[in-house]
Image (cartoon, rainbow, N blue to C red; front, side, top):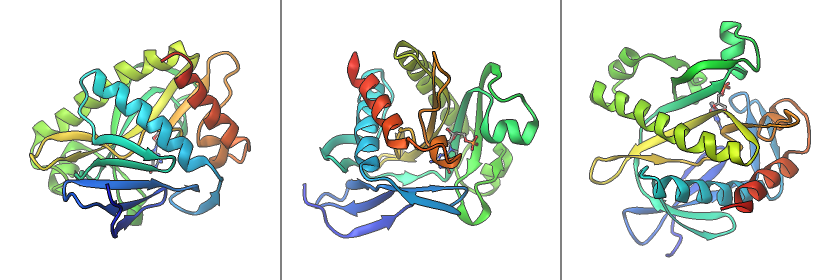
Length: 238
Ligand code: 5GP
């Protein structure tokens, strides 16, 4: 599959057209950003780790009946996937309180939530990704129908029901994560973007150590070692 013109450059990926109008190539970058782009850095090898971790998780989810945009990993930094119309809603799934949930609502950091929380953020850098309720999403025209919002929530919960026990077996707590969805050429809602330590929080079950982008957000260091460890645990017992 030939890599053609750049169609979009995001903070962590570049998107390229291919010779098939329905397929795109994502190039995973080594760049790191946090706090809506205010903190920036780069870590050699990070893009390849996220590409591989995402590929493994998309394959797992597909095998369990979740439709995704994933087609194949092309090489270390490139993934071939379906072209979708991105739905500008970040679907946040939380099992344990931390991050913005603890900051905004004063819920104790590390508290196991009584049930899985699913939230929507508006994917809009200029506005700083504000929280959305269903009416906001419909007024903004981010989806056409309430049914589609219900479907996003349902699919996000299904992803959590697969990934939470999967990572527990690998002695990682899946604390929270962000999913993005899109509509394929037939209008079906499918999982898109990436699933990696850039957009998930993983805490080691024994030590509580953070194994995700919070290492960068909080200046803890050791980001690449942590991402490598996540990948090794994924590959360890496939
Ligand atoms: P929080 O709202 O606590 O900052 O983030 C909740 C979860 O969603 C975390 O796993 C975080 O990595 C992910 N997340 C939320 N917003 C974004 C975003 O704009 N970019 C990325 N990469 N992850 C996000």
